Amino acid sequence: MGSVLPDSVDLDRWDEPSPGVDLRQRLVQWLGYQRHEFQRKWRDLSAEQLASWSIPPVELSVLGLIRHMQQMEHVYLSWGLGGGDQVETYGDDDYAGGSAQTVQEDVRLYLQEVDRADAAIGLMPALDSLGLGHGDPLGHTLVKMIDEYALHSGQAHMLRFAALGTLRR
Image (tube, rainbow, N blue to C red; front, side):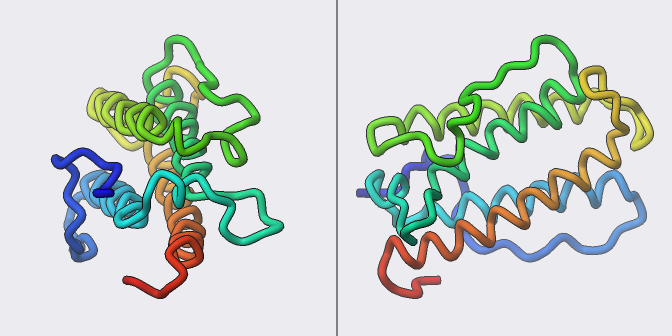
């Protein structure tokens, strides 16, 4: 099986963002970098491997992390910044939920939420602009999401190795 990501998603290794003058631009670049690294953890995994709890007794899979990050993109960025209706796509069933049969739909929902989140970020005029949903400033929210991705990319990295049964970088 090929990647569960659409062909349009770049799975090549990226360099970390370079220092620049504009803090907002750097934070958005770091968010993009962390998203990319998170998505790279999915390559070479079958739907079954994505959904497997590969480190028993831990009830966590790469798919659970994808579902969780879809919700984080919504709560902190799409809804958090843009307002509107807050939707819990998976409720409390994000980490442990999903199956090989839901992989394509879960990935689609995640990527769709990333697009909505980017649009919400683009509408914020400054780092101190307050989100219409959660009321937190854009700068704080970007740092929060960079942290979420760094944490969960590390988990996905280890789950990937366990699912593959080898250290394939």
